[in-house]
Image (cartoon, rainbow, N blue to C red):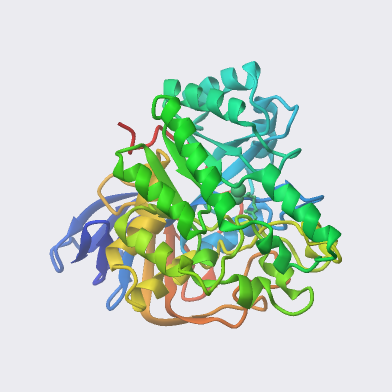
Length: 467
Ligand code: URP
Ligand code: ZN
Ligand code: ZN
């Protein structure tokens, strides 16, 4: 069993930063020592001048998701390798129950895609493509025996993943009973479909119309409706995914001020990118940034409000909603009709760096950076304290981060299976230096040392945040 000491770094956790040396025994963290107090060991990793943070947890990815007539372009192999290089050591991907499918069959298919292919540890949420007596019963089984304690429902995408309010209420009641979290894609799908049809009839076919037909009011309305449905379901825990708009954030804030079990995440794309500058790029270029919820207008206050929401904990988590599609042959499916562009952006490799830029820009504290990308997602989804913290007994998932480094993002150098980058040419502060996953150094100084198949499935418990 190998013993390692990460020496000379600043260990950052949710409660702050301390100078400490981290002793690793095999796959777990054994102890933290005041500088100079640790025993001599054979293998020392020098972290002088660097930040030592828990391996990041991305609670929202879609490897190989079938969507929009194609599949997300990252496999569990390519996507988890890219994640690892970017400092993410655990993903929670969405297993899918297609409409009409038995949940357990959808789950088995997802295990089949992931098993033996992952470079880092992984867990699953379950997308419910149909709420009925059988799937409600299956929820109990997944929580009790399969380590799946969160279920995503869609108020958007009628005819694909959509659930109506009655179905949503039934799933929430079940979740209230078994302790699961309901994750909500909160956009009013039927109303959006009307706006999409009207836009296409007017000949408005460019990618920007994807955003213009999904106004923030329809995100806010669905967010509010989800919150009140959860309230009717005896305050079932509710987590709003990929929140992008100020008015939707207001709904979450109000609910939290009332003491409700309501949480939300946002994603890097909503913190930095905009309807005008990216989705509105000339010609068909904007297709690269078609995702739902959509990028919002730079002339409104969304980005500033989201950063503030992260500081005040009205937004608890930053996930990527990693759902990559290549431009060629995939995004191009929507040439001449924006509604046929597969929805999704790929960023699993860049979340740690993009959020560190928020620290450099004075928008987040160091400890809040670590909380939103690692500790809180682990606590929110029943992975803590195994994941998300540098503490004795926790998995030795550790990132040594160089605050003086620089990261340049480009499709030419990234590891995701995408022929473009949503962040092409961005040069940002900070750099992932070394990544350890369960005690094994899997990336160091730009060299990748891991391998497919070393990642393990992690069964999750219930959320730490439930009352
Ligand atoms: O555009 C997105 N978000 N694609 C992935 C599917 C989803 O709704 O999360
Ligand atoms: Zn969604
Ligand atoms: Zn998603």
